[in-house]
Image (cartoon, rainbow, N blue to C red; front, side, top):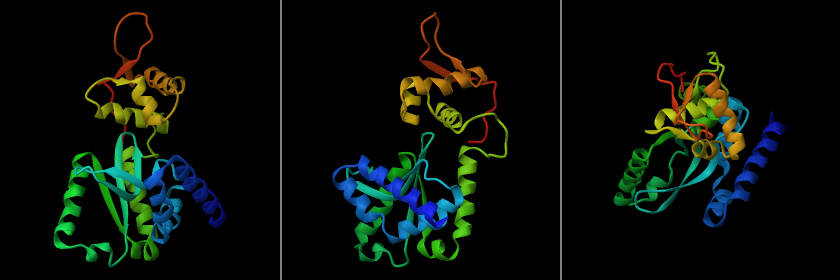
Length: 224
């Protein structure tokens, strides 16, 4: 697993470094350090065997207009999850009382923007990695579907259904293209599949090509 992890980890980091500029790029190069690498190697990789949907040193603009960076962001199906690794005796001890309090105000604003937060101690990564592998597997299974349940849906189709259930309007092809980071033709394929499987219903009339769909309310959504 060591060699396989190293290759996948290097490719993953290189991909994100190449996609970033300025401070975001520098923070990734400098910020993805020993504790974060340990989390990737000892917890995430053994739990999932890939880094899909996981973003290292992710830049977030908070309520005050300032930029902060979370150690990892898991972004999938319209859901944003921040994962922070906290070594014992972290930087909080170097903050004054107001700075310390503002940490939680900023976190609450991000929560109100739809972010969920997970904090993992560095000691647990070293001493109880299997516990956190199981906890994260349970989280992903609960939020995005238990692989043991048969719904005849691909991962992309599940993500589309989750997003459609969160929108207060019909889902559009542009939404799917942004979600899957793909071209329009590629975005239409899972939509067509979901229509064929009776999960989505086209919206609109006429013979022109459909560009919006709604969930079939008669169907019970799979665990997300």
